[in-house]
Length: 118
Image 1: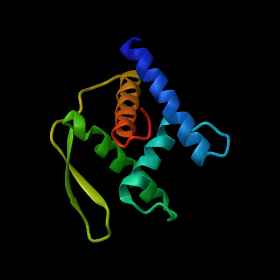
Image 2: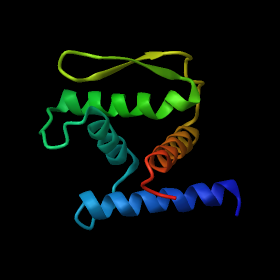
Image 3: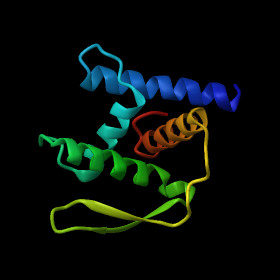
Image 4: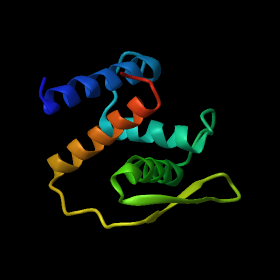
């Protein structure tokens, strides 16, 4: 199986698992999955968040997902329990499709690392 096929299969597996668990029959998109990862990383899974907090959660997720790629590193947790990351290396200029593939790959790796998928 090619690397692209494997990524596609694993991505579909992640989408199916999370959609079944959180979307009541709907299919979650990339942004929704990034948001869920942010909530998981914050550790406040039963809270309701305001719009700006939701954006911050997505930022947390993106930083966390890109740590293994060398773009960010964990910095500290603030007094309210929010993790902060610092930029290690600027992201390269990527086309929209390339960004999507990078994020899907990072998400798949996150769920492999956390043993949600195999």
